[in-house]
Length: 146
Image (cartoon, rainbow, N blue to C red; front, side, top):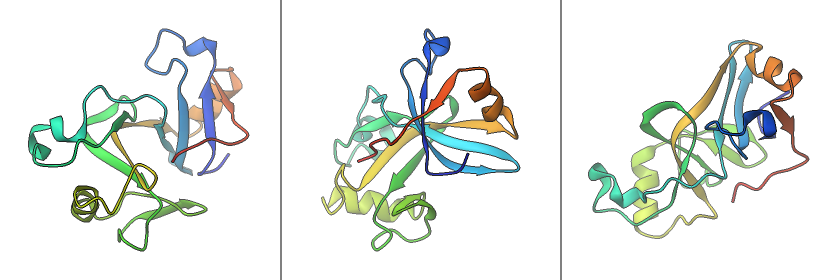
C-alpha cells in the first residue's frame, strides 16, 4: 500500500464514524498511515467557525476522528500554495494555510482546487494493513477528490 490510494469502508464499519467512508491516504511509511475521509461533508461551512467568520461560506469535510481541533487541507495548486507535501500525481497535503484562506476568499481557489477537513484518520505502523486484512477496508480502483 502507498500514499495516493483510496480505500472504502465495508459493512464491518457500519454504525461507526467510518460508515460508507471513502478515505484518501496521504501518508504511508514505517510509522503508520494518515488520510482523510473525502465523502462526508461537515455540517458547517468554513465561515461558521468563529475564527473564520469573515471568510467565504466554503464547504468542509469530516476528515477523521483524530485532532478535530485543527483544520487540514488537500489541494492541487502547488503553483499558488507553497509548502505542501506531494502525495501523488498533482495532489498535495498542507502548505501555507494563510495563503490558502486568502485564495479561497478572493475566489481564486474553488472546490475543484482544494478540500478542507476537520480532523484526520491515523493508524500506527501495520494497523491499517491489519484492518484491511480483517476486511474493514477495501482498496478502490480510483476515487474522486475534486
